Image (tube, rainbow, N blue to C red; front, side):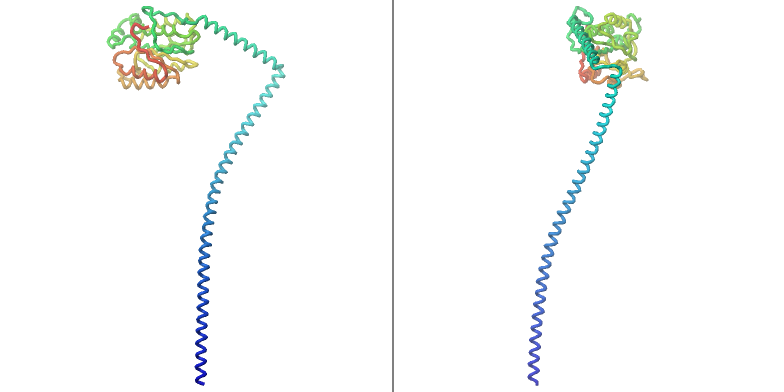
Length: 363
């Protein structure tokens, strides 16, 4: 019996060994399978993440394209609205034109009548053009007036004398009596007849005569004098353009200037503002003066004006000029105003005009 029991025990140990080996093999197989599943899951997750990134990029691009499409649709809607409005206006204009044609037909108006009327107007215009050409040929090389200076001399000035509407501004302030302050004070204490015959003032008046003698016959002009205020040289012609061809009127204007006595301060701003009364505006401006202004629109509070203040007044006056019109300046400078030449030269250059500083015996 003892022997049989040992044999049985030996058999049991062998079975446990076998069971242990089998369980280990199962565990090993499970571990191998689990590792393979983990690797496959990691690869699958990586692929899924890549797909998600691509989808997110597609979504972003799609949103951008959607915004562009919406903007395009908005622009198309706006264009369609404008086109519809234009079509509506064209339709309304067409209906009005058709209604007008019907009204004209009921009144007995015919196309032949309109054509004949246009032909008659064309013939009249051609006749006027021919007359103008003939007048130009007859007056070729002849000035509107004759002006002969001292010694029968003519000067090459460089002034731009052309234009259809020429405005001439003559400074008639007290400083136009003489070049020096002492002489101005002395002349102001004399009679009007002596002041009107002062050399400097006569030069200004003669300059106006010379300019009007050079103007094209077919052009228009206006001469204005200014001191504290600006006014037309010829009474009752305020805001009007005068005909150069009207010789009698030119003579009256010249005579009116010779009856004027210079006096008062210099308001260049009021002079430039007065140009606004002319309609249409001038296309060429001549300014005859002796320096920078001493006041603006109104009288200054003090009796003295500094050089810097005169520059400020000048800048304010320039802002009143009509746009894109050349300003030609004839300057007879006086003492005590050294900045006048530079400021006035800059004005002439900026407006494509010219600056002339004549000798005392000009013109």
